[in-house]
Length: 353
Image (cartoon, rainbow, N blue to C red; front, side, top):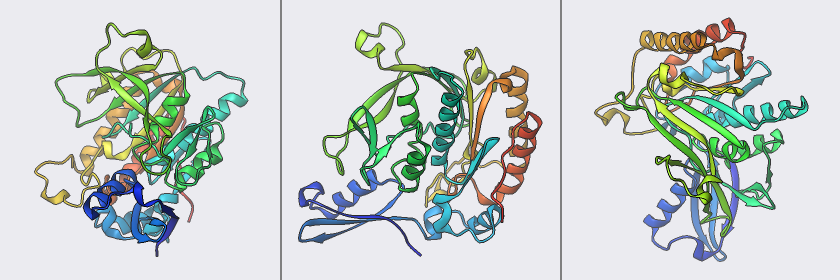
């Protein structure tokens, strides 16, 4: 079964004439959607589809994981799978984290609370600071695939952008950083260099769209290594500090007094596949066994409890990341995370059968 996102026709000049260059252009723009192309009299017909074949997700045990998630879940359902409640969210694809954050923003506004400062505790093997398929419009954003409004204070528009592929697994962070005035991103990664902590600054940027909305500006995020002597033009674009570290003590040190969002991508614990069809040929990968993963889960929560940050957590989102975190590890790992979250007053529930 193929799940169609959209079919569109682009003018002939939008894509290279060389088949190899054309393929590279489409793969770069639609990095997590399958884009087929054929010549038509009007130019190029682009057919966008969600992956529906097992090979795309690499993992030979994916069916087992999907059955555990919810009986009857198929590969073509992966992009839709999220279980959100006021007590926390769990999803298959990490793009749904932005949906949880959108609902959190709305909830704060309804309570009459300002959201000027936020701390994101980002537990992930990747920084997820890629650029979404959104462009600016009249002071807001619209998606480049359907040209419909995108607004983080309207969760339904966020949900549609995720389902339609305008916000992807590596690009959900950027719209949030462009919305919240001040944000501190603490990124915990086991594969980060063990001998140093990377302290830098997050900077709002834009990049020009090169395919669907020519001339439109897309929200991007830069990491500025140099903290000193920033000129005034750069100061206005600075969002806040970014810290990358594998050490729990540095990850949680000197946190500001601000609401905390806890985001856990399970590939932090094991990133065997990393979305790579040649994963078995790689000389090294982050691939610890289940006992080590359970220990790391406990270390994570023990550190948060000791630091007393748990009392300031206002949103919890967990993503399983098919094609990254091995499916045979899903059940036991999520059971442990559920237990540790429950002990600090949070609940993430799996979808019901």
